[in-house]
Length: 278
Image (cartoon, rainbow, N blue to C red; front, top):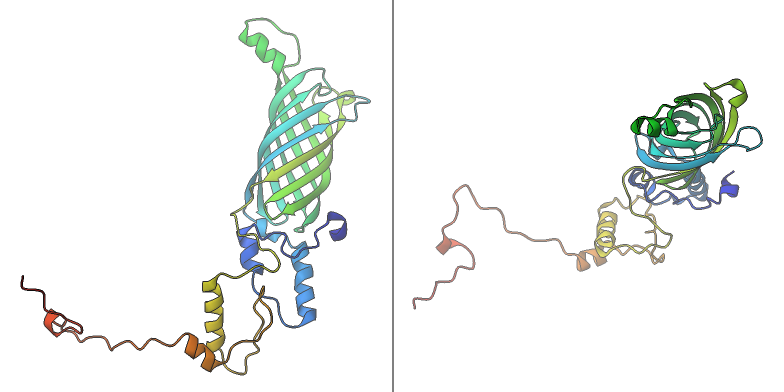
């Protein structure tokens, strides 16, 4: 499933700040540990917990029995990495009752917390007949259906395109309040985007900023000599400079001792120069 989805990069979700914080540390020197962590990163989508995003989608029936087509826009929320819900404003045409309806569509999905995530769930739809509303506004009597309700089981798959964008495909069977012969299969496709805080997208071979490079070198100098030093990602393996070279490049600051409780007068301060008299 990983290969089919094309997620060969272990940095696929670095545009999400939580994923970036969890996996931006350098890899271990051992190839076994490195490859094991890379495989975990390719699959892990637990970073979306407690995140919400905007959702747009469309759906249609098989058009053989009860032709129906619709679209919706709303929000999706992950309360846990494996449990999500959505609430959307939905419109449907010819929903098994030869009318157009506008209403609310809600659903709950249970899925695996992975980049390619099969899911199962259930949902409810409630809508009013558009023609009925128009006739009411025009003070005209109408005998058409005024309300349509539906409950449906649902199954499908979520595919995370990156850390903040999700593509979903699903199939559901709508049991409506019109009549059993108006029930129908409904096939949907949706896109959810804007999940969570934005992070920095990290590419392989990324160059470090000068301050990051200096800080890492200083950290290496502060480590004990018996600590195994790991290469800095994005830079050629030229070795870590010796302590003497680091001391020469970044000498420690020899600051004077702090003054006592009584502050020095300006005349006694180091570097004081008499002001010009004229």
